[in-house]
View 1 (cartoon, one colour):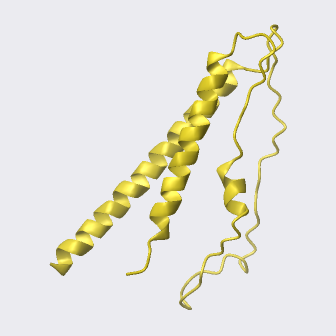
View 2: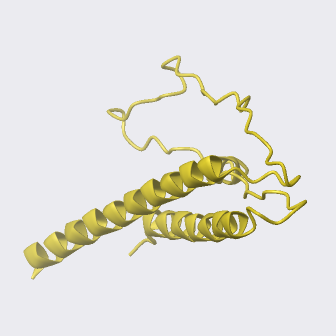
Length: 128
């Protein structure tokens, strides 16, 4: 049986989300610490982009998105967030938005894992 890379990818994504959540929690805990600089982790997409993975087209019926004229789209990142009077760069609004994003990522990962598990169990039931 060949290895299932989807499970590994979802697991790594969930680990990344856990690490980011811990970083966000540290920022919130130090919101009133004078001179504290907010931290964040590298986006998972940039980590994934460094792996240079490409989708395999193993059948003629598969779509080839490279020849479809699909372009990458990235956010500007020009958002400006305020600095508190204590001299630190933690903005609770921004940290809460990040925490909500991590929650959505974690929920997505768990839904993918649950669906894949159901798929595998269904396949095993039909084999037996």
